[in-house]
Image (cartoon, rainbow, N blue to C red; front, top):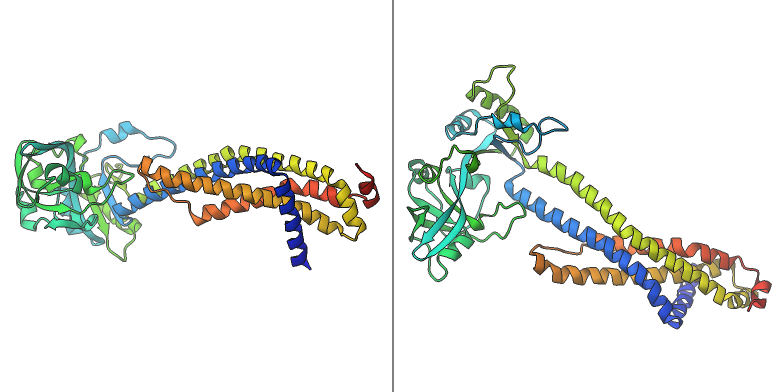
Length: 415
């Protein structure tokens, strides 16, 4: 009986919507815009969050970065930059000490970087990110080689003049020929290309190897002042598989304090950074953005809901005589209630469908314009239909209930 009741209610609702096309279209418009606004904001925010988190994941969730500056203030509520300013920068000689003493580390590497001009004959790439790295760098952030090979330990330790090129750098210098074995110039210093890194694609946090040139750290000393602030000297420490970051950080604190000969009561003069610090801040940030999305779309949904409620009151008034006839023929109050409530829900769901369809087209064509992967997820699709259905129920309940309570005699007499 319930199935038959619902079926007949939706049949009546559909006939009413079809017979009043213009009115139905105007009602649909409010819900369509509201659902479009909410779901588009959530889709962009979710896609942005996923892209950033994927980029962070590529840095390694089990890697600790020993640096001068903390990514997040160590003092809650403030960022005392003047205190961090006087800290010493990580030094290359500290890396082997950490390798020797840190039992929880799987790999330790050092990196310093600077933007330089890279040339090959008449071709050049301006502001290429040239990074001087130690041998174990590939263990920290792995990458694939499109051609050629990685540095040997002898090449990194002795500072051979060799280089690995990112995909975009290689394309800029060697558009029509193989790069392997060719001699390039980095800030006027010659280096032989021994490998080309496979294209990774853009990273939301700018850590893609595509636009980088990797050289042995001992060679990089000739190209840049590796102790300078602008070279971002960093020691990378990767934890073993069965060791947590917190355990390794506890060990690293003791080692770094020992290396730098800090007194027991002296504050740390180094920062231990990890990707979880950024992830925690991202949760707060995207929570605020999500709330803003509800506010932005909520006003449109509210307007659409009032529009549907208004249309439903008009529909009840127009069909009062018909309601009286239906009741006189035995129609129950529940049937009348479902009849008008179904019309409201169906109207709202159709509006939600068009809102989602519009969102899909915007994301499909917009992803190429902003160069970011944007996808309308199944979660947001379900959310869109759920919100639409709830708006239909809320907006249509009062008009539907008032229709179900009409006296059949008085309803038949109405004009």
